[in-house]
Amino acid sequence: MKFQRAIVLGAAVLLLAGCGVAKVAPVPTPTKGQASAAIGGGTFLNEKIPQSVLDLKLTDETGKNFSLNSLAGQTVVIANFLTSCQEICPMTTVNMRDIADSVAKTSLKDQVKVLEVTVDAATDTPARLKAYQALFGETSWSLATASEADLNTFWTYFGAPAEKTVRTAAEAAAGPGDWQTGKPVIIDYTHSDLVLIVGPKSTWSWLDLGSPKTTSGVIPTKLKAFLSSDGLHNLAKPEEPSWSVSAVTSALTQLTGVKVS
Image (cartoon, rainbow, N blue to C red; front, side, top):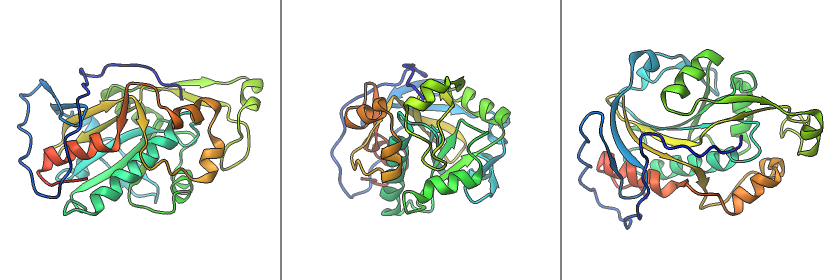
């Protein structure tokens, strides 16, 4: 998908605070409907998520059904992606994996779930998601799909509805073949890229948006070969605005009071 610049509820970017290992005081909760800039980047929110969104049926890479409502009590980090993206999503997945790895090293490992939710219901079946995750050689984070209607409702609420586009045969043939099938990629989706946090009380608690800026840079060989020329450029130098692992771990630190570095 090609990145669309968007401002969702006034996301802000500030300097990152230093890292440590001690517990910290949780950030004060903003007044309902208000937003405040986060120290490490992004914006803190306090928006109660509608029950209609909480109840949407999601299915993970193992075929297990769940919903945001079923995750109440946990803090959930969520990003949008699709497995056939050649421009940005592989870097999103690298970041989400790295966030999950950071969380796993803390006392939050059973309290925080890291989740990518696709925008492509037709292509991204549980089996496809599982094969995509297998390219990374670990399962520290989860991936999910849903029906087309439910994904549209889900991502429209979070401010990132996806628009389906169809490439011409010539356009598809000019790019790398699909990482799984080798066939030209005909269908693409355009959407804003964002990462968000849902709090344990089912509130939309934090948001950042833009191109994912990777720090580890470790992308599976198959996916790196799948990147288009724009994707390779985004890997080397993501366009601004961008979001990083450190912005998410800083927000988790402030929201939970447990240092995530």
